[in-house]
Amino acid sequence: MIVRKLQDIRKSDRNVQSKGWESARLLLKDDSMGFSFHVTTMYAGEELHMHYQNHLEAVLVLKGKGTIEDLGTGVTHPLASGVMYALDAHDRHVVRPETDILCACVFNPPVTGSEVHDESGAYPAEADMVREAVPSN
Image 1 (cartoon, rainbow, N blue to C red):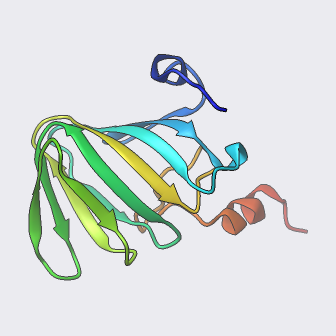
Image 2: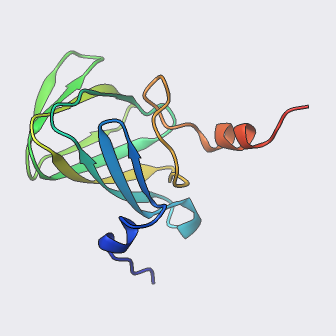
């Protein structure tokens, strides 16, 4: 059984911050659950362009409001407490928080912990992370 406190994760290296968001990663790949679980805050006034090409994600908004735009269809959906969205087709999207949005997120495959979005808005595939960590000759 794994038991962790959000307040402890927020004080550890499992709390990752980047431009426009902060993510407390409660479960990661090395926990061997088959998914990772995050509590993420997206900050008001930001425009977060994302495109998870290597992961599927489901998000439950716990607090806050804003919108998510599906860049493939141009459709914009309101986000508020109790709304879930799932990026089941590696959807290119933009989240526009009107207030800080607190959400619970699940990623498959699980992230390893330190990922931030690359220039395309994706988290790298784990194989890419391994390649980057191994110096080439």
